[in-house]
Structures are given as C-alpha cells and as structure tokens.
Amino acid sequence: MIRLFHVYKSFGGNPALRDISIHVRKGEFVFVTGPSGAGKTTLLRILFGSEKPSSGHILINGINLGRIRRKQLDLLRRKIGFVFQDFKLLNNKTIFENVAIALEVAGHGPGYIRKKTRQTLRSLGLAGKEGAYPLQLSGGEQQRVAIARALVKDPLILLADEPTGNLDPDLTREIMVLFRTIHMKGTTVVVATHSRELLQGTAIRKIFLDKGRVVKEE
Image (tube, rainbow, N blue to C red; front, side, top):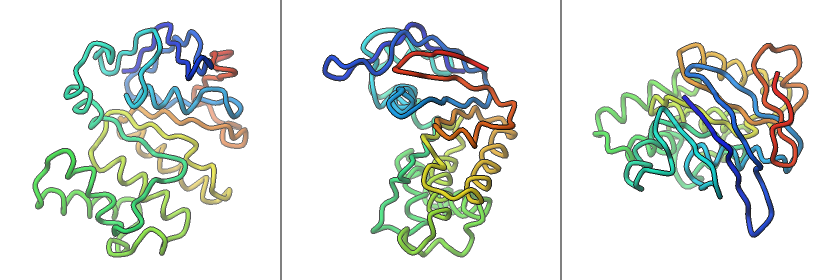
C-alpha cells in the first residue's frame, strides 16, 4: 500500500529525512515515533502529497507520486484521510459543514453529502452536534470532528499526526479505540506520535525515527 525507496527531504539545506525506505502493507496499523524534530510530520506530509521529496521514490497504492500530474495527485489524495494535531477545523463553519466539505471538494451531490456526513458524525458519537461550532466543543469532541472529516470519504489510508498530543489520558484512550476500530474495517492506518505511553503494551508495529533516519523497527 505504501512504499518508500531512499527518500530524502531537505528544507533550505537542512535535512529533514535521510534515506528513508519503508513498506506499509495494505490494512496494516503502524506507529511512526521519535523525538520532536525526528521527521515524523515531514514523512506524513510526503505520504499525503503535500510535500515533495528532494529525492527518492514513493508509491501509494501502486502509484508513483513522482510520476503523476497534479490532477491525478488530487484524485489520489481523496483516498487518503489526514488527521492533524491542531485539528484545523474552520471555526466559522458548523460541525456538519466542517465534515461535509471533504465530500463537496470531491464533487459529491447534496443528497449523498447529507446522508454520509450525518452517518459519519453519528458513528463517532457526534449526533446532535451538527449545528454546533468548533469552539463550542471540548478538545476531545473537536478531535473526533477532525477524524470524521478524514473518514467521511472512506479513505484507503488514514494518516494521523500526533492525534492525541493535546488530549488527557482518558481522551487519548478513546481516540485510539476509534483508530483501532477504523483499522479493523480494513483501512491502512499510520499514526505519528512521540508519546511513549501510547506505544507501551501494544503489539502494533513501530518505526522509530531520529534526525530524519529510520533507526529501529519493532
């Protein structure tokens, strides 16, 4: 599902990723971990197609990101959900509108958008919140809205960048249960985190980064 071959990425001469070669199988759940500045966010942004590597090759679902046109990249990104640490919700739009926008961009009709958005919000325990605005919700509820926005388009791949970084332990467990449920439905899930607590006691595969390099896998 995801293959990287000798990927490098630099910003203004400063290396962020160095010789990254990894393989994530279809339907796999993987943690990408390491200290701040290790390259976790850069790696996820490259997988999403919002950053281009300085060199190397990336294949997503058999498609080489370096050899497709912008329109094809946009179509591919519709199959990838991205959950940001800071949620990136639109505060001037309702919860329904924040989630529905992912389907509007994909060109779906109004009837499908209404049905799918309500169904997704309900599945994440957000029924009755459709008309609320992000700042009226708790941090945990806002994170669930961000997850709903990523899931509403039924992605093949879900990428999450420090999705529990701003949450307390109880909410962290709740969000991780959601990710495991999503994974059990067949979605490939890649979660970037620096939280040791999140990694303890789990058999989920872990890729360790440090200074832009893969230093260990478990």
